Length: 325
Ligand code: TRP
Ligand code: SF4
Image 1 (cartoon, rainbow, N blue to C red):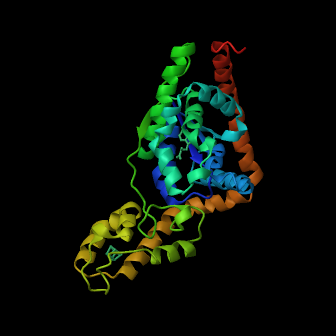
Image 2: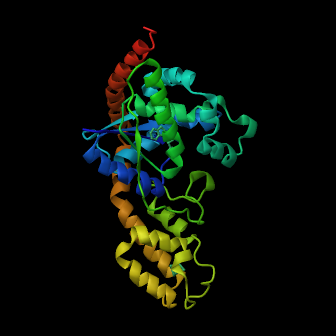
Image 3: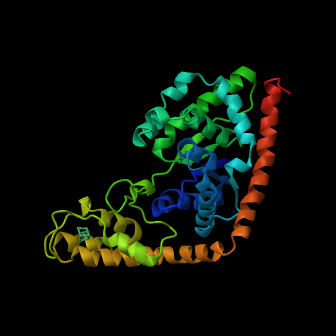
């Protein structure tokens, strides 16, 4: 069976954008591939090295999110990156053979530095972000990596590193390919990209009340002020949510909005119900699991052990080929 590897940066509780864009895709993949899904807590350090105290808590929150949406340790290997120290060793070895321009031209890292306004605070570790990601993937000899478009430059480097290593020391690693998932993009309630740092997200773990408050505050078509004004769904954030969470009523909402037959308040209320309906079983499961944290952590410990076995074998072979053993 072909292998898939993918990681989620542990920067806090996941939101419904992660659910629709990433986790739902994982659910499919765990049925079709030998899948490894992990919490990239070391990657979280690349930009969050000042607040390491929140990492442990974040890790558990992401574990709860991953399990509550239905990732199943019987079907995939769930683990924590930092619990597999072989990643860090191989990362160091690879960093020796990567020419500086390869990492310096990486547009995604450049964007991170710009968006987070890091300037001189951007660390050496952040520059190595794609090399660590390469390690995560090739240490399991994964064939495919489900990612969004922004991660493609990293995968490009991953393939270049594989070719370079194999050319220098002998055939070991497999070139990974992106499984580009054309998932619907869930905007934040303010219409910008959904993100925790912009405080415009709806969390998987949020209560129904908070979900409703968030949705009621969402931006709509600015030209639709009164109930009977004619609206333009194509420019409305709320409508984008309807497209994802309320497929069965989306045609009716579109024409009612365009004809001025529905007001934004009613439209949002309808949406809030649908989102909450959809999230209810997930949230109930999450609530149950949150009372059994030891069991949850055990699942990831077990997965990390399984991952270590494979990662250890690959590292051993790499060290042999490099004549370091
Ligand atoms: N960089 C990925 C992201 O931000 C997270 C990640 C780390 C990852 N290591 C990985 C994804 C390995 C896929 C494979 O989304
Ligand atoms: Fe958006 Fe609904 Fe208002 Fe139309 S009625 S502008 S779709 S919130």
